[in-house]
Amino acid sequence: MTMTTELSEQAINQNPEEPIKVRRLARNKKLLAGLLIGGAILLFGLIGPFLTQDPRLVNDIGLAGPSADHWLGTTQTGQDVLAQLAHGTRGSLLVGAIVGLLTLLLSAFFGVVGAYAGGWLDELFSLFTNVMLVIPGLPLVIVISSYVPDKSIWLVSVVLAITSWAGSARVLRGYTLSLRSRDYVLASRVAGERRWRILTVEILPNLIPLLASQVVFAVIFAILGEAGLSYLGLGASGSFTWGTMLYYAQNGLALRLGAWWWFVPPGLMLALFGAALSLINFSIDEIINPKLRHQTRADRKSWRMSREQLHKAKEATL
Figure 1 (spheres, rainbow, N blue to C red):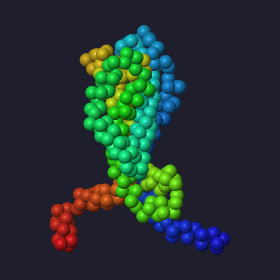
Figure 2 (tube, rainbow, N blue to C red):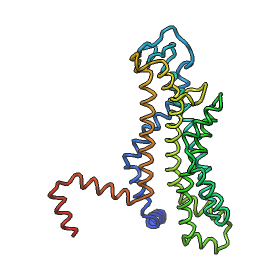
Figure 3 (cartoon, helix red, strand yellow):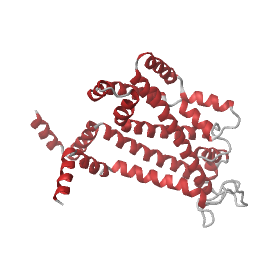
Figure 4 (cartoon, rainbow, N blue to C red):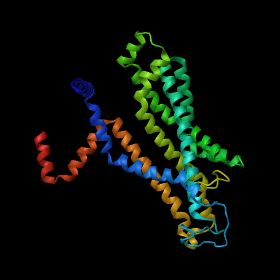
């Protein structure tokens, strides 16, 4: 019993900041709120399609308001809005997941691998990244989407990923260049460790918070970008997303006819999920940059102080 207690105390003394980081992460209200809202929407997108009817099923009740039979009413052709919202949530989340994964792979390959390798490979990857960075993303997506008649969710996701990875790659390249010259990396090279092991063991773990932030930002961009394309009629054909619901609601004159239940739910889901991912992204930024967290706390304290207290605090510091 005494030996176990001594071992636990030694483990805590070796890394005293670890329990503090865990408690600080658990008290992060932004992160908790973002995970709660995002998790609820994700659960609805995964389970909702199995609990609702066919979203393409046409009923004889058009533009009916919310009722016991149709909780979110029906469209102009009598289709159930709740069923469309459940399938649309799954479609939008699928787009976000595909774009986030592809952006992670492309940005990590061209940013991290090129910066660590150095030499002509880094110059080549950097040149290609700069070329992709200056290409306007939205016009290119519109052009590609307009020339393809039958667009699937996978095609739209790939196009969005191709036009959105370059910025993340530039950020990862700059951070990898700074990590490459750290003492522990140089020590690993002197010890004769292989390059792939140094990259995966010494460098990549330090990039995990930054990679997570880049993935969250890519998911936000993908969902909003797909919604904008679908609203313009250039989104995935034959699939339900939040953007296609808004597109069909616009063509069906839902706003003019007062059918708020047709366009408010997908718009609200877009806003809530975007806010949830933004809160998560802000929390990750605070974890990456402790100065940002301390500055935020200092601002909160200054807001709570009166002018006289603030003036006295400034005089005390001078």
